[in-house]
Length: 77
Image (cartoon, rainbow, N blue to C red; front, side, top):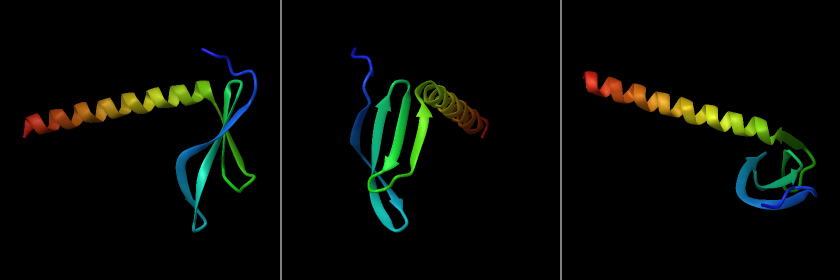
């Protein structure tokens, strides 16, 4: 796999409604960070990739717990 030594910016296929307008999300990968902004704006949000990974794992585990809890409640009825 190619390491991310140079920043790479791409317009994604994700869209967000912002102030009544629909804007594309632009993503930049630079080192260990993911930088997000809406096309046509200057405001940037930066997320560390390691933190994003941990958040995704927590979300998956939470979803599995909720599914298991719902299955147990359905069996009890």
